[in-house]
Image (cartoon, rainbow over all chains, first blue to last red; front, side, top):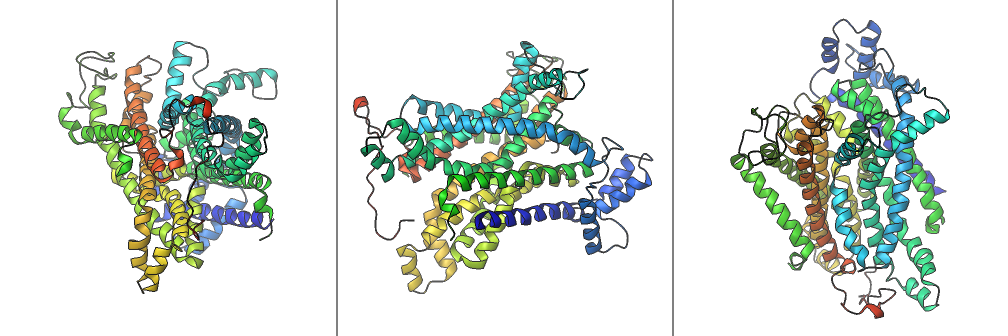
Length: 326
Length: 300
């Protein structure tokens, strides 16, 4: 339990750090984002929007930094992240709330598939070190060196433009009303195939490699030799003795590579114009929509922290050593 | 240096050397000005334009050649800065221990957990001028934490070794212990961290250019992809516009990974695959048992 509490405390500190970075950045960096924004949206900004911008970026005349910081937190707790300019007059919170489910489901499913698949391949490749499976390593390296978004471009060129097998963009067919209908779910799944496969293909190599190397290291441990000596079936030794222990670094590494996976998923969404948070971020970047960019950064960071906490729970279940009271 | 013999590392270094050469001489050997528009619009590869032309008649081959420099410079500069940061933070934390360790580890863990790409995007887009150097700085500011963590763990296991204790007993300063007793033993880890960070930096920079955060008037492979995407190269079937840039990225990334494998196998001989006895299929050692002589006291 202490382990979990310590991790939770760490995530709280990290969340605080991320929120504070978000607060400090626009105040530290040169230039006046509010003025830029007001000039860009000549006359289209209401007094309300300008006021919220000032709170967000802290360019309020005469307010001290601590007061600004306090106000910033107050707004945050009310779920007020300011107004988006690309989707004016929608609030950032609304924009994020609309796109987040798309990203969460796409990323959740693909990450689990890629982790399970990669780990299984890694178990076999590591167990049969020196077999033909090792020949796959350079191939997987090549695939992991390809940027996610470029693989997405190729997938679109081949499967959407040339073969016309899958749609090139969007999250569901135009004309379908979002809701829990068979038509909508089917259309959404159909649109998710290409982006999903892209993410799995480019992220699976990392898991294969990590697991393979850990398996190689673990298979020469004494307890594996002992298990062989007992005459246990090879399959059982491989899965219950070697893989069980070799998977631990993958699980703890899972948390750390999550940030990287998130980055890749955001890019895949941009390429596929998938209605998730990455595509919204793309639009925000192109329009220099600072409130939306900051809100997205905050939400992504918080989501990653929650996912990390979940990974810690899994680790706790897998590794009895962490459950001991130290 | 034994790991140079490793064929993986050799291949990696060869490909990397090729790209370094292109980065150095690219702008001179490029047949056209990468930004100059020509009469041949959106042509597939031919003798005159080996990688075809863009919608405005620019030569893709020249763009790739000229763009190599930006990619490598940002990658190497960012890798260098991040490696220095990770060595300073990681080795200090591991060697000093105590409160310093707690604080520095917490710091690097925060940077590990916060997703790097959105952070870099935000930092870079707040800056009025996103030059190559600024991007390299932003990338290294977010990319040092992994190296620091690995180095800290290694330093922890090194600091109680006999040779360090002996030097300590003779009254050496802490900084001398770190620089002359601990650091030489970390060379391989630092090298592999550097290569890893360069991969990360190259991918990040290309990504930033691709989504249009970085200055798009500087040619690099990401910029080529940015223009290809924005001019609907995909829908027009102009594969030659985005395939060369992507393959270059993948080739460079693979080369760097191969170098890293070589370093890993140098550090951990168990990972070597080439050392197996050939033609001995029937007698596969099931457990892959490797006898290792353990000297007492350093089971870390």
